[in-house]
Length: 388
Image 1 (cartoon, rainbow, N blue to C red):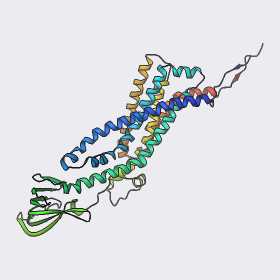
Image 2: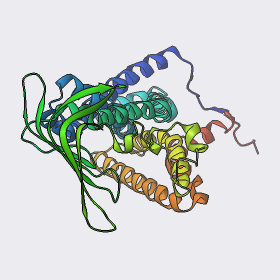
Image 3: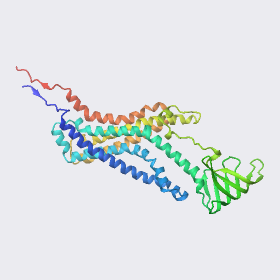
Image 4: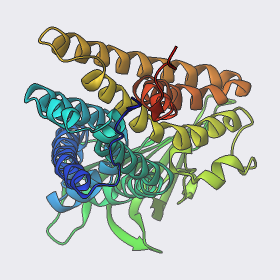
């Protein structure tokens, strides 16, 4: 008699219901865990900017607007990790509740049981790619611009009487008192913006004004004291009226963006008139990092699937396999950081960044699904041995 091996129907309607059932749990857990962890990181990182509120009198609204621009960068970093945690937890719970056993008894293959996890990994990978390529550079650029405006422009209007206020990295302002009409009295300005020509400016009174949307202080009845670097003599220049720009050094109202703010096109084709030659390799590495690291979400999800579905279920295996999966994630993350560091020194090693991010996922998929596809290629009808 011929032996016929049944093949499960991959397009059965009941499988799509199971897909939605598992995928719903995965996505809800992914949103909840990513949101909670991003909020926690945002709270801890926001402590660095509390000094802007306490020391410079910024409103709570400005503080929230400034720090909220960092949230996309937090999400881009933690989303692959939360994808692993969610896939590992949900599938581990399905195995503990014997739901995976029931699905397997109903004729579902490992690929069909893992399909919701693959959908979740694809969604997380797509979100990470959008964040890294577009959202994070835009939001981080807006953050740096906002912070630059607060520290170097708005801070000039937040000068407190009786306090040495550092309005920029090379300028400090002190006022004895501030009158009700806004007049400043007893002013001292330490201006170190010009190397070799540092000066101390004293004035009886002054006032803050806006000129071309930039803060300036107008000084009356004062003197400018400067030590000649060649002769060592003290030069004193008295004035009846003088205006000082408090916005930024050397009167420049622009700043040079760093690699984290540039787009992929700007990183791959940088304007070397603004940057030094040694920054070119850093920009290439940053571009490749943005394009490759989103696929860590796929690899991490596959490691979670292998940790939850690889092998038979037992109480001992339910503890050992998750621990091995966590160690695998730590190893992949450490290897990725090490390769990025090596590639920054030797650009020929940049393809290894893709191998580190995609390789673990491909290996796990091979272990999980290749035996199934091999069995599918076997003949469905095996004829018995011929009669003697």
